[in-house]
Length: 112
Length: 117
Image (cartoon, rainbow over the protein chains, first blue to last red):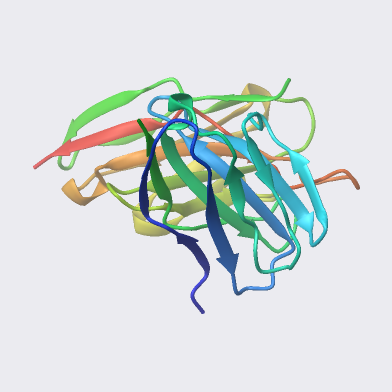
């Protein structure tokens, strides 16, 4: 099994551009999450999903959108990129709430 | 609001030194507790977890952690660190019970451990 796969690994965007960060998992996990990691801040939850068709905001959702049309995929969209969104983004999944999460390798995003 | 606090932001040790990283959480109910490690340039990996039972849990690579409910703490320990333990360590909490359990992890700020050879 590949686990949690994120693409791309690196990306540089200009201010105002949009892009989608892809996340897919092959473990049939119902729960999926998007985090951003900034130095000295730990990981902050952006959005999460407890199953296909269900999404909800986390701690820092502004400037982002998500969808969950299938169990496997949980893309994160930036509509109007801003320098404050420069960060490392991690996707994670778990079969059940409260259980350990499996993390992807991350996407390093720079907005200039 | 629930929160997780890691007291040490940056720790520098020599090889073979003992390690203890502090973690406290603020929540009065039952919690699940985790320590994750992030090696340079890699994703987070689970070191160990506590759900219930023996409050002293052992994880991978010789790490252990002790849950002290009265102190709301879950400190990570290792008797003798190695250069390869250089990494960032995150304490995290999630809440296991109830229909509203969404498995959201609340992370501490992280502790950067640097082990000198």
